[in-house]
Image 1 (cartoon, rainbow, N blue to C red):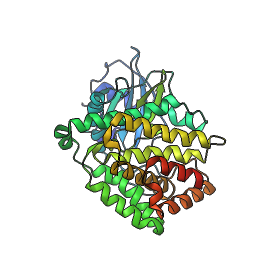
Image 2: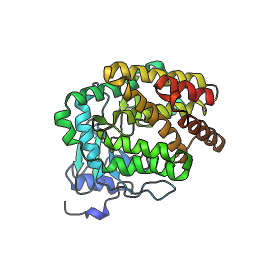
Image 3: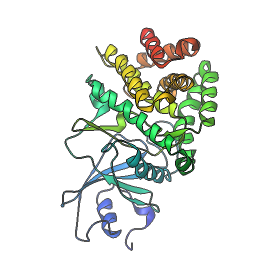
Image 4: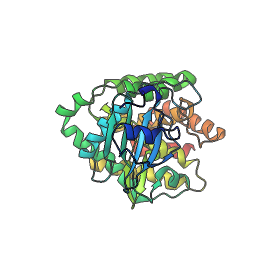
Amino acid sequence: MTGMATADVDIEAPGDLARYLRETGRIAPDETPACRVLQGGVSNKTVLAERANGEAWVVKQALEKLRVASDWFSSPLRIHREALGMRWLERLAPKGTITPLVFEDETRHILAMQAVPQPHENWKSRLLAGRVDEAHVAAFGALLGTVQRESTARAGELSGVFAERSFFESLRLEPYYARAAEKTPAAAGFLRALQDETRARRETLVHGDYSPKNVLIYREQLVLLDHEVVHWGDGAFDVGFALAHLLSKAHHVAGAREKFLQAAERFWHAYAEALGPAASGEAEARAARHALGCLLARVDGRSPLEYLTEPERAKQRAVVLDLMARPHLCERVPGTIQAFGKGM
């Protein structure tokens, strides 16, 4: 490349992405794709590039300082962890659920993936509108269980490939559990024990951001996105992370409380069925603890759920603290869901 220095690349700036793609030989010298900045992410710049030949790419560039109110930093090198995750998840996950990688630029911390064709819809948006489809919930659970089952079967190979966990520390354990422990001292013992437990686990491939916001619905199939904190670790974290999203919506979306509580249970059962016997016993108890930890973190961590009102946050905090003090109610995932629902 001759015209654009590394530091000058800003894919959100008008004209920069097209120029970068031309100068790096990704597209023809006379080609100018239509570029549109995509909103919603806090950790990356994300642009849709639509080419004249009908191809469409989503191009991502990692941010060092995340777009949140508090100071939250993470190395842009995590974009390469996402590229690695995409390569492997495409082999492990059900067909069509992972977007193929187009290219990775290791110097400028940029990657491109094939865009999910239109029309598609973000699953989080559907859920916040109260549209809870049992088939989507079951597929969400089965997808996670399948990835964990298949990756565990290849532990000898994958445990080394995904051993590095600094991005999980900087983007999950510190901003979620450690930050919430600082802000809510009554939960500090529970959360610090959960952090220690999580760090000690090296069992399966963990997505680390298994959330409805990272799922698109295309032709009624789920497509999973955003893999930058994927690592080899505690699979129960993904379960608790996903459950926290479903349960937080149970008391936010008007008239849909029971639907979301039922969806949380449906997700768990579909996950457990896909994973197999490894989902039972001690692993289930850890998943329940992670659900509580994430429910509190999405109120008192560095990345609170933006749709919760202050009264909803206060109620969620109070219910979770009560359950943390009564661990006998939360040894099983369905029991945790039911206890949370009763408290709300």
